[in-house]
View 1 (cartoon, rainbow, N blue to C red):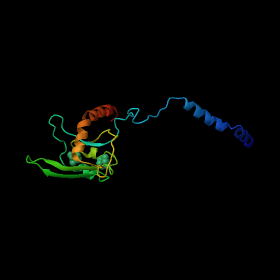
View 2 (cartoon, protein in one colour):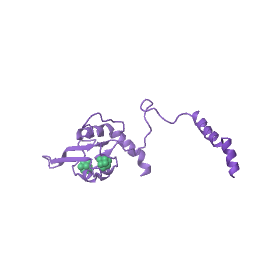
View 3 (cartoon, rainbow, N blue to C red):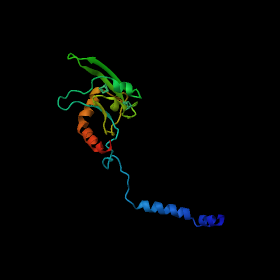
View 4 (cartoon, rainbow, N blue to C red):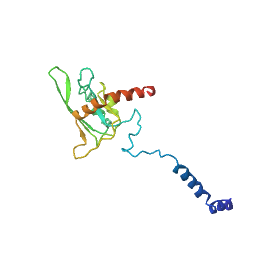
Length: 163
Ligand code: SF4
Ligand code: SF4
């Protein structure tokens, strides 16, 4: 056995085998994309990107009722909420901050929310350019929700067969 192994080593058999694999893949079309020049990367409808706050489409009223369940559920302590009662007796947030440095995109806040307000969108290509930009405030979160409402609905529909 030792002699056979020595002959195999002498003939560089393993080396040539490896080289053949390299050669085969060298002429195949590349599976990688030059992001962002070559368009967007295909994403699962379950992709967990930036968080957003949603509004009711018919009234434009924010869904969030300031119950703070998301805040207490968040394992990373990324959510900070302050709230007050409105004149009509309903409670709404006066501050809703998410620290994107702390958020681990686990989705537990989304699971906890009783009114389907806080959701994870598939927005991934956002950048933080300066100190303090890591805090997404209520207006920013609502703006993402407005921009991604139809995409959120589409992703839920695409995911329907798997739930
Ligand atoms: S996705 Fe997870 S870590 Fe991020 S805010 Fe929600 S609960 Fe917290
Ligand atoms: S986003 Fe949902 S869970 Fe969080 S405070 Fe608002 S209603 Fe409650």
